[in-house]
Every structure is written in C-alpha cells, then in structure tokens.
Image (cartoon, rainbow, N blue to C red; front, top):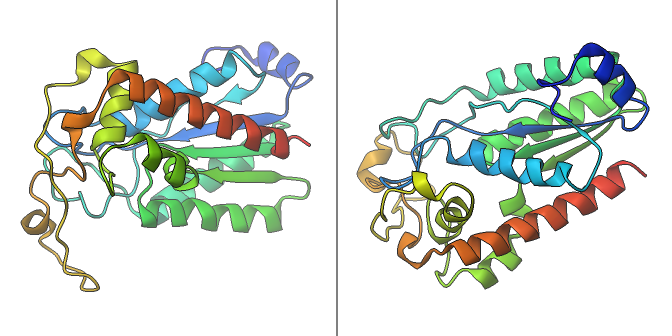
Length: 236
C-alpha cells in the first residue's frame, strides 16, 4: 500500500493487515553521463513496487535526497547533510509510530558511507526511545556484495557501473543514454581531498559497457528475495 495514494480510512484498515512501513531512500546524484540523476531513487522504488505484489506492507513516498560525498562536486548532484537526513528520518519514524506502525525498514538505493551511517545512527536512537519498535536498515548493495560480484563481469564494480546500469536497463531503458567509459576513482586514501572531481572526473566506478537488462533482472530478483527475507524476520 503506497501511503501517498490511500485515504486515512484505508490507512486505518491497513493497520489490521500490517504494521510495517518501508521507507525508500534515494539521491539526486550524478551517475555518469549515461544514467539519470534519480537512479538510486528509481531502483529503490521499483523494487518496493514489486515487493507489494507479493506482500502486504505500507510503503512511504521516497526521500529523494541523500548524503553524497565523493560525487558532491559533480554536475547535478544535490546533497543534504547527515544531520538533515537524521532529523528527517527521526521525525518520519516517530510520527509513523504514533499512528500505529511498529516495524520499519529503511531501504536505501544509495550506499554511501556517511549516508548509511546516518540511517544506522537513527535506528540506534529509535530502538532505545520507542518501546516495541523494530527497525531494519537495508542497503542491497552492502548485503548482496558477494552475489552481485558473481553477476558482474567487472571486478570491483560499483557506482554507475555494470550492475546499476543493468538494473536501469531492466526497469527504465528509455532513460539510459548510451554508455559512459569504464572508469575507477583514484582518491589518494587515506587522505580526504576537497577537489574530488580531480580524482574522479567521469563519476563512474566500473564498466557500464558490460551491462545488460538480463543481468538487471537477476539483480532485481536477488534484492527482492533478500528484502522479503528481512521482512519475515522483522515481522516475526
């Protein structure tokens, strides 16, 4: 049940079927020259649309903005701070809890370190504060790294590379504008640098040229299976 599409009475009735709310998180972030800025959001939303065909859950409207660090200076990226993400998530979960929701899954299509840490910090605060709440913080790429690496032909594939391009070919092929060149960032770790464009000009981590819609469908099925399994545990 998409809560933005139902009435208050339908929400009240829905609570008799489920007390679980899944919140999708995305970004407005560069994904090379070939993928749209909303790639992270679109993937999360599509996976949860498919999940609703199998399970009865509430799904919140997506949060389109996230914490972007390595891509912060690239054209089109619009980032928020970790504090803003924490405050938004705290408010959404707290008020949803007041309305009868007890189980929360925070599903992020963006796997950035500071972004995911902000969501995990919020979950830690809320499980201490709200009696009876259950929260899962999910980044499919983090949980399925091994499985996804077996699908990808590209070693160390990541942002806007083979996997993400494949998923977009499966769900929104009309938005895939050719292919960016294979590229990998060259940040001088452990140094934190200001001019990130100098070390990662194209904003691609991997080889989009090896992407296919067939690989994308396999990725989607893997993510769906993983999220359904977490949902089972959350609702026990």
